[in-house]
Length: 352
Image 1 (cartoon, rainbow, N blue to C red):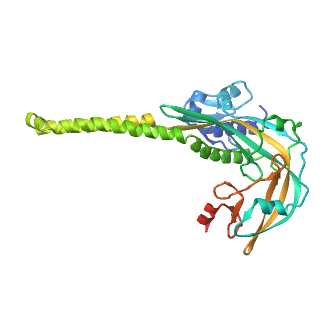
Image 2: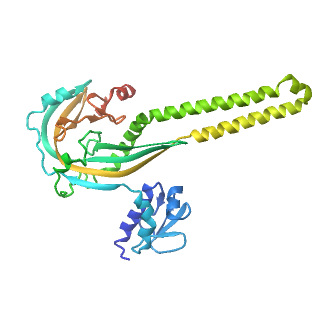
Image 3: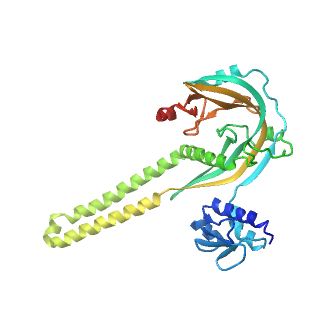
């Protein structure tokens, strides 16, 4: 195998394993590496939780080479990866009027002076992550979610259905990759995934609230029923007739046996009602499109900073800034003292 392909195969294997939760140690110059796998990945690969990585085949080893065995071994892990679609909108109408008034109408600047210094066309990507969220207990709750994130600002936005005809009719063939500020052509999917997953947890918790309430009510009801039953047994163990007919030691043994059985039944009940959350990413839609980037100079006492606000031609509206504390999209904006970061009211009070 060519030595030029080895580093690429090693990075590919590391990426796949690490995305499934493995800890991988394989230095660039080493002929072999080691991976510590979580139980799910170990089961998918049909081995133990410790896996040797090498360019050459061997016992208890993942042979990272161009042989057919390598992709076949990784197939179960790759099957869990989300599919990705990239769509490109060549042109859209961009607002040409001055942006001072639209910005003033959309945003409230709570503790800083903000001056709109200009606007210019730009191209950015929007990442729409499609997830399945499930809560497993003795019953199951599941629902599909989609979260769209502006890959440049990191803020969640609401777009028309990214796979809907009103958007797809505007799309053309994918354009060339555009380098980022550091020369990296990665559109930041890892960052948008982390943010989308956090937003998903908040949304899922809200939508699953009736399900959680029903579980909690059922748990309290069954706990009450079991306690009433075993407390009745304990009362029977303390009746005068029991004390007269049985030795004191026998009564104490019966009481302990009943209390142990009550704890065991309560633990079984807690296990039955325990909730396991499972989040599965299914699809990522990357939408590359033109936007209007509005430059704003923010002055906070002695500090200053330029922030970019995006005007979206699909929604024909300005998008929110992202709170640097909690990540919420905000139009009522506070700014931190020294580095002039945008903050929501709650994060600003904690930061002060």
